[in-house]
Image (cartoon, rainbow, N blue to C red; front, side):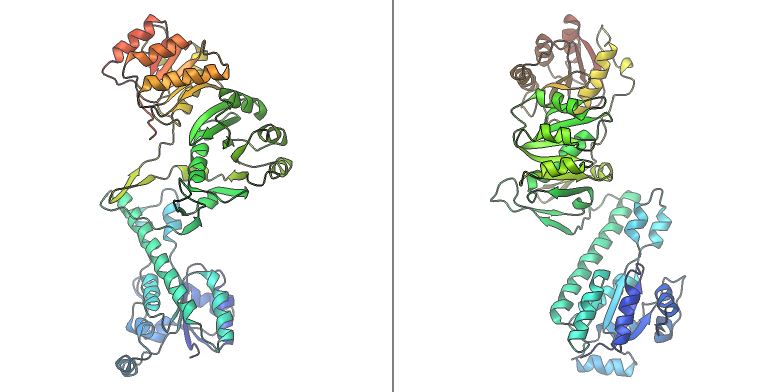
Length: 512
């Protein structure tokens, strides 16, 4: 049966005028509210105000306008149910066959800085979700549109089907409604939970962004949800896998720590090498690559400056899985795209904000939620955090700041040997800290790099003096660590015995 009557009430008026004109041309009567009605009427369409349709005025500053039996009865009445139809005739409730509604912009409102609780609450839509849900529940007969992208689809179907839509389309649109309203309710609950510090529930509803190539292993399916593609734009290469996404996140987080031109190389989320330069990224690359020339094979390279052709030529000499940069010069991109499978990822300006989102991971029976570790803590006023007899030199302090920013991105237990602008040896993820020290020393030796005069950073306290002693014997002259061990004094004594400078940041940066 041809659609007779439509109800249009939208906050986002994108495409609504063209949609209404299309409906009018098909002989559909249009009901509307407030700003939408005015917008349509001002553009020459014949519109019936909802208040005229219901015989009841809008009330309470627009809070009540569509919450009326003549609206919900028009949406919910079953066309093949005799009792429903008898009630509709008795109470003069005509059918509403099509609804186009989008909701008050709650998500956009709470995303603004310094939004007040009152302002947020006023942007909680009540009538919109109610009408959407009523129409979606009765989608056997009612076409419900919550996304302006579907206006054209619906009009085309009506033109091809004697003024009606197909059941397949109505089913798809009804699913979109319940998905959208679940997202909307989750956003409200999440904001109120945070704003009012109730901490009783955690809500999350995200759209599917992509089916990934696979998970950790090819036999594991994986999907990515949310708006990842708004922050990381894939310019070239194969589809991403689960591990690719994790690697991209880790690489972006590491390079955000630095303001100088920086290149970092990562493998399985761990830095293989990090280098900084005053101007030339090729110099930064050389410092990073020299830290470990074996591990980068099939790894991830990230820079905090635009990728240049000269750097692209150097990088392309080794096999790399992913290259990430804020931008790619046209000739650099053309050069790198010669490698069919190499993924090129552009970081948007929104990446720092995206990386500050809470960290979420599954747990038996639920999820774990944690604040993101976005900033290297404890680097302020290092001169007053010295625990050793000898204070660090200016050069050692600069090296400490560099090493500390790197070590927070290495899996615990983490050890990093560094100078002020490059890594020299990295030990990651061992069961004891002294083993991480030994691995970092061994890696530096394998790379042919001297640790004499280097600084060593430890992501957490040295629980025993053995690790610090190994680092000192390898050539480190200074150490930066959180402190907090029962044996701190033993570690301090070991540093003093070797004339090493040592500072305690008072903050650890475990990464599990």
